Image (cartoon, rainbow, N blue to C red; front, top):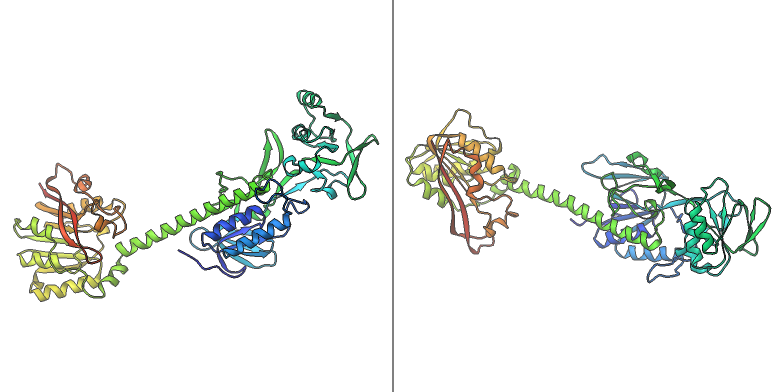
Length: 532
């Protein structure tokens, strides 16, 4: 099912993406390329706004973050994705059937989405050291892979604010011989082994808390310490606390959880149930720093792509289930058959050949024709001396059957009943022949129907069930697969051997006219049993 793209917030979308960074735009592109209607809502406060360039993004090395976002938006627009500058205030489940969400914006507008991709990133909470936040993303850094090359061979101070300090110092030591670790007040202290490793690599460790970042000519020149000493440096490395931007998900019962390294909490993240970003809320995926605070831009984009692909697959699954339900309604529900019988006759008007073969040797008595349709089998039985009850759930089909019986001069030998065989219960009534010709039900329901039809057979009477064989591709594929078809042996569990003598389990080929008018060979499953 292909949906046209709506034009603005306030409309219905297949997917709303909250967050227009690398993760959100990558997911939006994947969904747009799959012809989904997608709206990206971007608050315009990217985590990397202060950074000069994006690194380690293959093919986009050293691209400024804003330029990368502009490129991503242009690519998304190519596939019909819409981007709106907006901040989401909350999200709630929609009131309609199935999975979906109502997304409310700060200005009060609302839009609906069948699925949601949250890529709102995280906020970096820095230690309260004067001057530190102002230099964040420039020469106050945290990731050697994001910014380390740019400060190589410079004097670097690592603030030990959490358990990552020794690890960070070792990574930056790969880039510079001048690395110093400064122990922040109240922060976890490196263990003896870690201190030994740092010293062995030529990294100094100072137990003198930082009090101020010193800046001159728009660049860091040093760090003032609690002792009053000034430590010369050109870059400061600090591990911030990562706080997931996800408060708006609270109405869905989804809250951030601690982001931990061992026993140490480094921040919060929105938890996922699987690697592709699914959450405990059906229909909601997350990607990028909101769930993986340490992911670089390229990793966030990859996660967004993966989440977008999984969302599309999830929508396809839902649409397939809807299509199957609609298909089954066309095959098994009364309104579709009323419509089908409303035009010209759809059957040949001739008796089904397996009924003619199997009933030819039976002494006429009372016969029950299940799913009698336009009445050809009932008319044939009545013409051969049977007193017939024809049942069907289509009133239009029954009316046409009655016309055919009148034209054949056997109307007085046939009673027509309107009922659904899926709820058929014979009660005390019994027939000498119960025949079901090409009645098919899904999900193995033919076994239960056969059991109930058997209860309608009089002692010594005959049960005859005929249908399309699963190997009958000419018929099975036309009707949507083989799940509705059966072999004679499939129905045997319905018949207690103590009560039944199975006389025929056969598969018979015969010539027929195919769906497009071509001549084909079909195979009929035939089960005939006599009640003891």
